[in-house]
Length: 217
Image 1 (tube, rainbow, N blue to C red):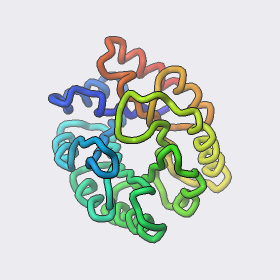
Image 2: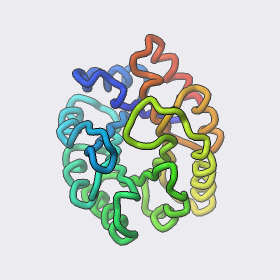
Image 3: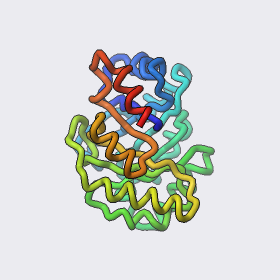
């Protein structure tokens, strides 16, 4: 299992140090939540955080855009140094626009991901699955850390895992929201391959043990 610790739960005054702390504990990914205050109520960072991390953090920069109009903004997150840029399907006006975002990300030699909110039917992802490098299932409402895991996400994960095997798709299946030892086991059983964990790791004295236990799922 790949673990992508979320900087949303980290010390905001020491993001490089917080990312590298998780690298030393065994994480290869770091999850960067970008919120614009419009698509979701909260605000976090802009592409500057990616630029800061890139030369000082030798991890996969897993950038999750919770922003309006991703077509207008994804390029700057790609050029800043993201390895993966994931945008929300709900932020696109139609299928054509979503495909343009994927193509733009790929044209900048970055891996492309799509995320869906808990109330979005998983079947809405079908037109894009063949061209994606990552699919992110939100198991909480995006925009706020520390929320409780929503079991309804398990059916979505199982659906996407089955589709991947059936069609030979190449995307990584990532889950974000309320991940801990218990929910991690549930999503792993359903087929998840990448777990985003924030408050379960950051601020805990035994974060290394917790990370290692998740990685073994």
